[in-house]
Amino acid sequence: MHLDWIKAFVAVAEKGGFLQAAQSLGRAQSRISDQVAKLEADLGVVLVDRAVRPVRLTVAGELFLGHAQDVLATLDTARAEALALSGSTYGTVRLACMSSVAGAFVPRLIDRFSRVEHNIEVNVLEGPTATLPEVLHRRDADLAVVPLAYVLNDPELQYISLWDEPLRLLVHPAHRLSGSDGVAVSALTGETVITPGSGDGARGLSPEVAALLGEAGVTVASARRVASPHTLVSMVRSGLGVGVLSELAVRLTGTEGIDVLRFTEPGAIRHTVLAWRRDRKNSSAAQQLCTFIATHRPPEGTTRAR
Image (cartoon, rainbow, N blue to C red):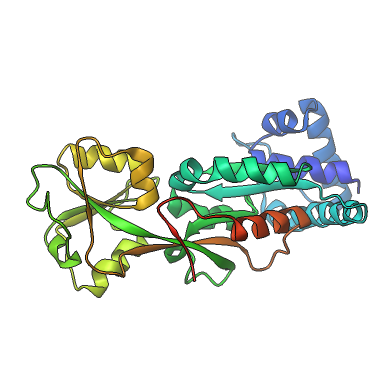
């Protein structure tokens, strides 16, 4: 069994096909296919079902994938530790985050981190908030900046606190609450409430808003989750409901055509954390980034978590 065979298989699994794997590794597609075939012959099992499009892993492939990824991660860690003996840290870290963090925090973070760690590359994976825990579970990311409510009851993930930021209420200028100095959560009773974080437009509320309304005993008329803060703002601007967004998301999207109100309850807060898989030891590069994020100044409009 050769290391290149394992790398080829993992690339096919993670990229979703032989062509995509070949492009990511800078090799010919025929070579990737040949290396995966040799790995299958060596193991005596079929790892990739080539009879369907797009290709997919067999049961054996799914089982082997985790071990293969662990092997590559272990080797990457070993290389990084060897380089550390000469004072260098090497590697690539995949950081998943929601759009508000990607827009308001990550660019400055990477700029400053790259000045300190020249040999560590940070790949940013931006997606709907609700998908970030699954990105970690699938091992598509090493770390994720995510609201605490999304990982609080997930035993497979562990996290450290980063910052807190207020939740804001967004209403149309003609809405009955527009112009209020402060709004109690109970005022949302009977409203259509829109929250971000879901890529499928599902009905329901984001976990943090659901908890907030639940504590206040509020029953809404209807609720919908949308993919991005921009979509939420557009819907509020069109009078389709009221929205609840974090401070960072509000700053990212702007407030033209809407009224942004504060909640009177001190518990109307988003707690943001940095999470990773509990069963996976972070590489030296990932640990370096983790430490840097934890000690870095939080975004404007937020306060460091205590």
